[in-house]
Length: 202
Image (cartoon, rainbow, N blue to C red):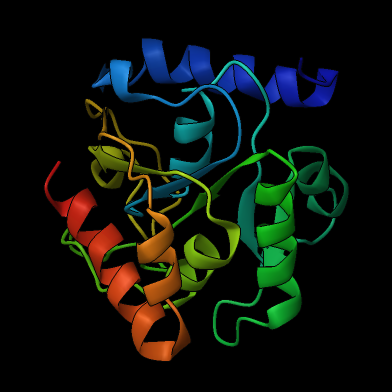
């Protein structure tokens, strides 16, 4: 089920992605559609969150910069399940909220790189996603987006016509032993690198 305001955004973005950008999905059979899922994707553009959201027919939870919660967005973003996050100084309260959402059975989208790419290359993963994965124990769904940077580059407010492809990788199910090993800063960092590597392989 989708609330009407979420459904409206889902329908509008979905129609735009299909008609303007010819959105193509590869690996749809790998998509986890039931239960909690930590969706980990590279970050190319402001288009990325609705792109990922359109893969699912039910609502998901997103992260958004605190600075974006201004004016009408103060109301709209929470309606679209966006959690405000400080990119420069991620706080434990935000991380705990994300972990709680996963434990409650939601799917949550996280960009391991934290910020949008400047040149299209993949960046390094912050250890925060390793912590989230370890503490929640949720399956991890690696996703790679291509073409979104060309459609809406960082620093540009102008939409360009570009073919967008979303590739969905096989989910990562961490074993009890792997979850136990993923503790402390080094453990979280190692797990974050593993997640980023799975995105890079797509």
